[in-house]
Image (cartoon, rainbow, N blue to C red; front, side):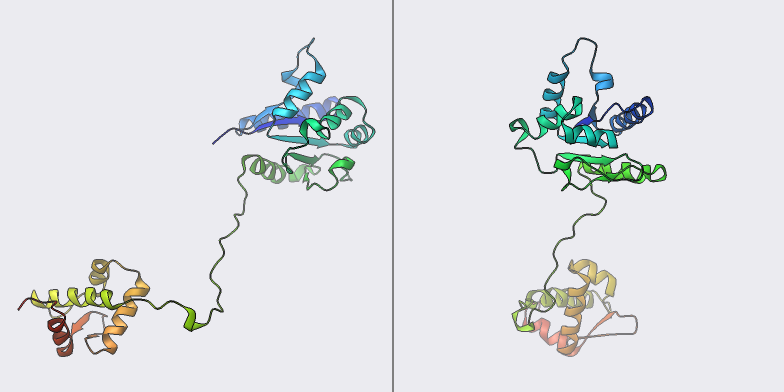
Length: 246
């Protein structure tokens, strides 16, 4: 499985906020995400616009940490946040996946995101006691590992009975009777239900259908322990279908 590459976009609101973003990025890397962050990927003398352009373009996903100041800068197009917004909405990334940008909410009391992200679903990191739940949602999204998997479509329960393909049981009935007559020839008065099922190698449902078919035809009967007893009619069936050597 490939390692997801993630660029973290945020505004330098305060030292406390920078530390929160640093801790988030560190935890992402500790959980298998190649997180890119200016605090460890930029050095004095580096070209800031080049850093943004290169990493925004190469990232698999972009995590936008939305605070009130971040939203204000993105909407007004000011500072590094404004430049990143310009890159994301420019031709450089015009063909990005629809869910490449993940807004996460960091405000207290509001859930604002930049205008160009209004249609995006966000992850709410605004509540301290909800951090673990939000982080789990984020990391699952980045790894493509949703908590709930979409189930397969089942059969239509309203298909008319006459349209359901008939189960071909003639060969399977012969297999069942072959086992019963083999046990009889070996001197056993009955065939054990569980051992017969294991030998015939079919589903429990199919096995019970075969037993019912054989009983209705008078070929066998079941005792109180569900073991199979061969009837005289069953013996004649086995002879007629050459299931026993003469």
